[in-house]
Image (cartoon, rainbow, N blue to C red; front, side):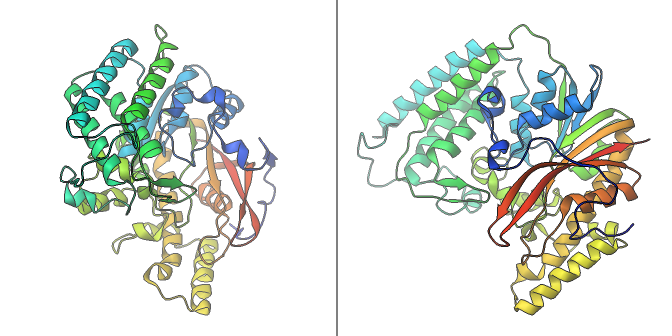
Length: 446
């Protein structure tokens, strides 16, 4: 197949605009906050996009929906609200946990609220005994605070200054009180509310698109924001009391191993947004809450976690990686990787990460080829797929037309390419260009 690197669009393939362009269309609408807002990646695609494709594909009531890169569960929540059974695959343990909780509507909201109020009172009482207060600046904290409750190996995984000592101390005290309810049906909901409250209210983190440290907050409330998150959950759960919703199954697994957990020919619809080839380290996005909740306890577990991801950034590349063999024959991808390497040499870039730019490009598209090849066994004949992907120029300003290359790979694997839908454009400061974020619409003929 002829390469389309640097060209728009593929010859003979329809291109349409489903929503328009601009940053605002990716935001969570106020009407969509129920369940979705319990915990969400800053760059998650919006619920209304999922609804669009459920309608576009004319999904029947017996159809099964899959999101193989389910993240924090946007597709799965929307499928459940629409009365559709669904599967999710996710390799990030924190995101897997979040999507599992966000689709569990079986708990008693009143019992959860009463437990949360008891936990809040217990925590505040404990803080008072230690000379602390959940309200910042209301009391002077003790001169010496230790972080001995956080395991040193785990603490080394945190982004420096991601949370200040005093809010961290409060958070650990609250977490200890929550642990007393570890046998309660709503225990995981309490933990997810904790994760969101700590990151959004107590930490020093900012997100946008990469995670980093904003201004340092010496003190911050923890208990009150957590209780507010629980109350928000309770309000949403009351909306679905007594209503039947189809099952959701979410697997903590690599998207390149779909057939290991899903039955053959069991999926009718795929709506997903995989990682893009850039320098965004997705493991850093959830690092603070992953450490606090014990999903990642040391460097070895972090490495194992990274190993289960499609390679999309140089910080997740390892010597033994071989997904690039899946696209060794693809002239367009090989040409793109060579272009990146030639640019690196011309610019005199010699860091270890920069030397990996061309390799991670091959590994990314190879990993996606492996995923799409694996997916074929679980798709029913006529299955419809929507992949939300974006162009990138992170590697020395060389343009990567992600959607077009994935479309070529999919066609080589037997998928029908239906069209490209322009979702939005994003302005890239590095290249001064508008980057396309689009939906590659595919069909599996069987």
